[in-house]
Image (tube, rainbow, N blue to C red):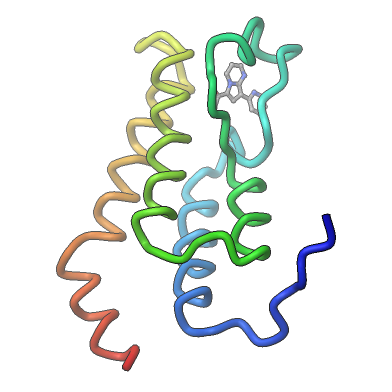
Length: 121
Ligand SMILES: CC(=O)c1cc(-c2ccccn2)c2ncccn12
């Protein structure tokens, strides 16, 4: 469906784009960069009901899907939770998801938000 692209990106979307870039850079192995296929992860699509990855979050941001921070946080936390559901605790993917979710929680924490709110009137 042709969704109108946002001509000028408002301050809120700029903030989410900054958060997304920051979190993508923390995923240096690119485990979370693209949708996971059943080829690289057997039965993934039957185990993980709501898959999400950074490229999907980028698309949703570009289409103006995120209206609140909790929507954005929700997708990020779901992405990490999916990895901690599908993969066993002793795997590199589980550990990477745990680490990434802690980084994300700190990034979008209350005090950071208070500061961010100071600039967006
Ligand atoms: C995030 C995740 O669950 C994941 C990423 C990958 C992944 C991502 C990029 C390249 C290779 N593997 C993966 N492979 C097998 C099982 C799980 N995964």
